[in-house]
Image (cartoon, rainbow, N blue to C red; front, side, top):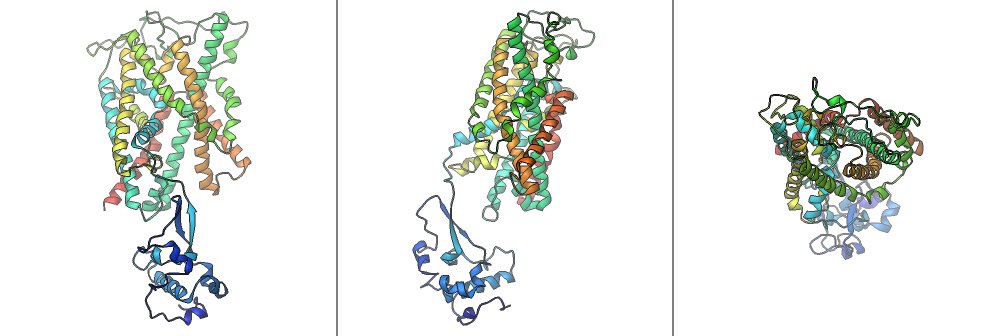
Length: 526
């Protein structure tokens, strides 16, 4: 047991006290420690980190003489042996920080924390949760029924708030035991590598689902924006979807959504009859060609090593949400309210149901719409008053829930055509040549153009670090991964361009994260 000790250490009297009150280390140590034993740092950005106890100087006598006195060496050896008797413990046999000699510590500069106000925290959480799901809320309410949809949106907000609350509380319980950077660290602590792996996979699936939805929406927005410009250039306003003969000419019911055996207000039109000379719409097809045109715009920028440039445009998200608020209000004021709970004719525009058996589609969308568990720790880490984290989280969820309910209810209740016409992207229910819709599409396109590289970067960082141990193994690795990811996005954009279904399917990736979060709570309780 004593074989690891040096000759000088054997000559030291180890019968004395562990801590020499007159000399807690070498001369420099006394200058860095106060009377209370705490490290005194002149720079608020500094913190002390201890070297491992297996420091080189313990086993190299020639180097000890120059850096550690014999009394300190004996104390270090004593603690080292005690730790062997109680390995992996965090108990009284660990060497206290104020006893560790100065040469066994290093200074590390860290960013100043605790400068984030509650208002910024709430806004950051709200802005993080606000996303493409906002465009699918009217469709989600259609799938669940009007009353059932509203109730489920509120219920799912409560469920996701509770799991996010447990994630934040887990950090408080683990404080001082492990460094928690994200939720996967919590899962690793309680469930080992398996828990960490499941948490990382769920996070990757969520990011991949977001990328697929963004690619579909960007293809849709780019298609309509270019079509708008082209139609105005050639003075042609035929569309691929407009089958509306009612007085609400800006509302659209895609032919695939027309109720069966219904002739109310619908008439089929054909696109491009006057454009055969150019075959524009054969080249510019929303599903078959536009997803490939996006590669020319996006592929060069997703290979950047750092996405810092794109983070400067996050404010576009807030502007887009505010514009959609105004957009929905203007359309509702123009169309009026079209709800009839007593009608039995489902083909009438005002026909409304309270409940539908397809309600699970809404729970899937809301699970992703309210998902912030994998980043709520990071967002609240710099909170000036950490005791307000739970309050701020609750306020953020209330705001998000109110936003989703508003957008879903206002558009659903005012839509002037049959409710079965409502698409999983509400802008698909607006005519291509509508000016407000054009502005919304072009704004959302540029917002997503800036966010998509960030999604790629985060997924690449997590995947590469987990598989190769480096966030940038080589340019070849990055290119191969990006080609695979874009290929997956294009396949969905061509064969399944329905964001509502994709977001609903993503709940299978969300629910395991909720499961692990809930089980962490049960573990903490015990």
